[in-house]
Image (cartoon, rainbow, N blue to C red; front, side, top):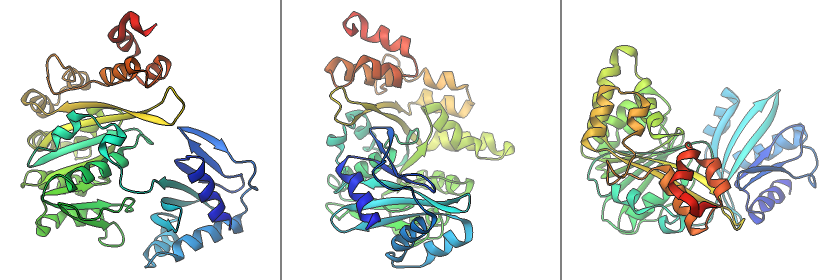
Length: 360
């Protein structure tokens, strides 16, 4: 009963994440803010253990229970009839079970509903190569990845393969065929699944994370072998995303890594979620860096981050959209307040100059 009540509270109140910790009342993250639910009792160790046991028992396999017993940490998807799907991270802290449960909205997210800009969708016209979707924690990158898979699924006839940990959004075949593989259930690891992905005759491969060197190596190989690869990553900016993909290599392979990435990359998309002015949730601000020859050369040369960021300039790169440009458009339309936009901007002064006197 406690599990159903807390899941229902999250869904009804529009929460994105549920935090369960011993000893504390549950908390919800709503529109980016963490709110304690004082109407619920403080979590006791036995309650936390039983909640996790119920969710793990609903899975069609015991591998996740074994993983938690072995490591004290596990990720999995949980479905509750009538309430939806949830992504669960369970872990031990101070000897007790704690959980963070992500609410996965009903249905498949649509690109137009999320406000994904045309510049991002145009990157999907590529026949091969690597597209990196990145942002900080809680920036909605996983949701955007699912929306892009759905966009392709409904617009082209292709074979789409996904690697997820865990599977959150279920894709039914439309024009495309979509095969979804869950790490730990359908394949042991991202690296092993990606290493064999070409055997599935895949046109598009969507990857939920690149946790290690082997998975990065396999991804770059796929992107240079005729497949279009979409990757979700955690990084605050485009330069950081590029740096993470190369610095994971040993020092003596850094030059090779930059060269391979320069050949494979097709674009980097950075996103942030910004509170809406009307208080009805958050909206998407996106930065788009197409991989022009100049950008690829900068990656191969290993130039400083500032030099990469300089290419996110619509005057020098017609396909690029800076975060400030995206935020300015939201402010001018009245979708977000100037205060919220400035808080989200990496260059607040530049944003104020871009909007001009109308911002006041």
